[in-house]
Image 1 (tube, helix red, strand yellow):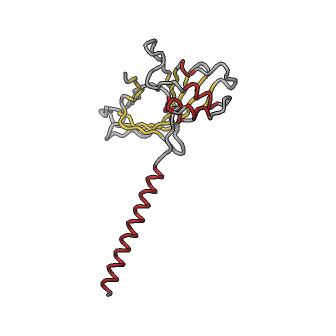
Image 2 (spheres, rainbow, N blue to C red; image 1 turned 180 degrees about the vertical axis):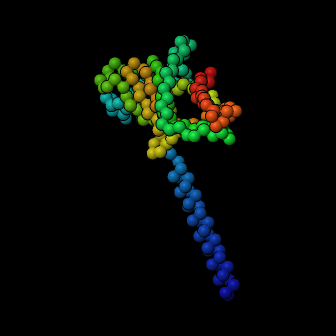
Amino acid sequence: MKFFLAILVVAFFSLYVEEVCSKEKSSKKGKGKKKQYLCPSQQSAEDLARVPANSTSNILNRLLVSYDPRIRPNFKGIPVDVAVNIFINSFGSIQETTMDYRVNIFLRQKWNDPRLKLPTDWKGSESLTVDSTMYKCLWKPDLFFANEKNANFHDVTQENILLFIFRDGDVLVSMRLSVTLSCPLDLTLFPMDTQRCKMQLESFW
């Protein structure tokens, strides 16, 4: 009888542990999921119609409802000029063993996209400051760091991306990055040496 009770207790405990673990897993999955943002071009006509006509949201929807981010501005026309500005927040120490260094920067890019000119009936300011979710809906320059070893964006407490859209179609994006860059060192004159570490930013195409 005692043996039978022991089996029942073990079986009950096993079922309890399995149920708790299952709940924890489903809870973690639920927490990790973020609500997916749909660009105006992906939304239904009914969803777009719910937005008040004179609101800023309606202006943005009108700009993007037929916008295709896969196609660059002035397609088959003149190249897109991208102005780049970098502000260095912090500069880590140079690592002699791995021959690299790490920087925390604000990378700012500005270009013109005629498709994003604000409508003539827009009576607001000269520019719109837009949430980073809209950044995913736009065409973006293909810049990259040629001597990059490792890099990451920052998303605490929100994605560190600031987006401005100007009346004439100019787009300004500012984002915070941490980048580890290669820096070949000549240590022949160490410790009296002078090193030059480059930050190579190029277009991929």
